[in-house]
Length: 148
Image 1: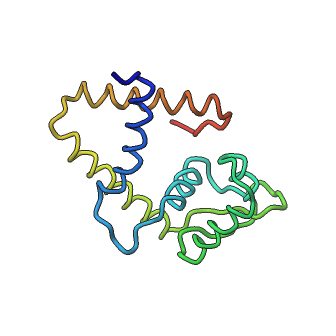
Image 2: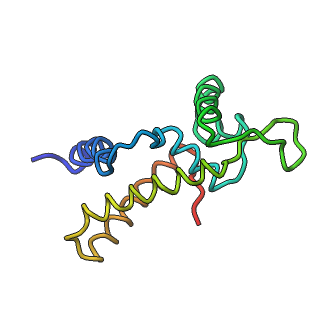
Image 3: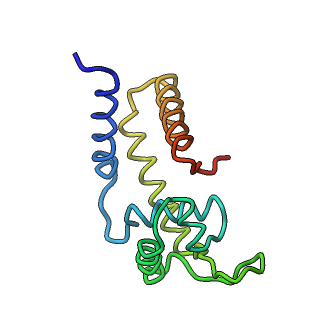
C-alpha cells in the first residue's frame, strides 16, 4: 500500500495534468505563465520585473520573455511607477482583465462539473486542504501568495 506522501505526489502530478483538460481549448486562452502573472499583478497591483522576480523566484531573462509576449498580446502595459520609482511597472490592460476573467470563469465552470456530485462539505474540505498545502509550500519557499 502506498504511503500518503506517495499518493499525494501522484495526485498532485495528475491534478496538474488534468486542470487544463477541464476547459475547452480556445485560440485566445491565456497560457499558464500569463494566467499566473496576471493573477499576481491583479492581486498586488502594478509590478516591476524585479518585483515579479522576487514574487516568483524567476530570473529577469525569463520574465522579460514572458512579459514581452504579454505586451504583444495586449494583456499588460508598461506604466510609470505610481510610487515615483525609476523602474517601469506592468499593469493589466482592459483586454488582460477580460481574458483573465474569462479564463477564470471557464476554470471555475470546469471544476463545477467535476464537483457536481460532491456535497458542499466535501468541496469545502478539498478547498481547505488545498489551501493548507499551498500555504505550507509558500511558508517553505518564503514567497506567499497575496490572499484576501
